[in-house]
Length: 290
Image (cartoon, rainbow, N blue to C red; front, side, top):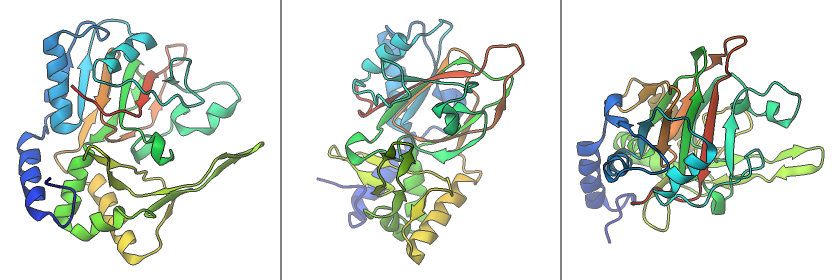
C-alpha cells in the first residue's frame, strides 16, 4: 500500500504531492458555499462542502438563518462527525460558546475567552492521543466591531512545503517526543497532565494529523538542533506570504467546517452596548467523511 507520508516512499509522496497541488484551493471565494438550512443540507450543498474538505481539508459555509447549537450538531453529523470533544467549558451538547468572558471565573484564564490575538495552532494540541481533535466547526453568530480575522492553512500543505524544503524537518517533527505541553495545575492539583507527542502523525486510516501551537510559553520542544531548525522553518512558513495561507473574517451566518487545519485569530474590539463577538465551536474526535 503506498504511503505518501513515509519519508522512505518517495514515489508515493510525489504522486500525492502532484494531486494535492493540482486540486489545492488558493482563492478564498472558492471555499465559500451558500447554504440554506445547515441542519438539512441539500445533496448539492453537501457535495460542495465535502469536495472542498476532501481537496483542502476545509470549507466555509454561509447561511442567512439564525443558527443554534443543535443545528451545528446536525451539520456535523451529516459529515460523519458524531464524537464531540465535550471539554469542561462546553455546553451540554459539547459545543463551546466562544465570547469575551466578563465575569470573574476560570474562563478568563483562557485566551479564546478574551479579545486578545491567538497564535497559529491546531485545536486540542494539549489533548492525549485518544482524544486528538480531527475535525471542527466554527460558526459565527455575532462578529466584532473591529478585528477578529482568521488566517487558515491546510496542514497537509504545511507538511508538503516543509518536506519540499527539507525532509529532515518532517522527520524531526514526527518523533514521539517532539513537543511537550506541560501539566496544568489548579487549586485541586494536576488538572491536566503533561502531554508529549509528535507534530505530524498518521492515523490508522492513513490520514495526516497535525498537533501544533506557536505559543512560546508553556511549550517544551525537544532540545536538539534538528528540532529547533524544523520549528523555525515552520514558523517562517506560517508568517510568509505563501498563497495557500488564506485570510478571512467570518460574518454572522458564516462558519468553518474543517479537518482541524492550522488557524489563528487576530485581536478584536467589541462595540459598547452591542452584541459581543460570539462563535460556536464544535470539536470532534472524528474526521470529515462522505
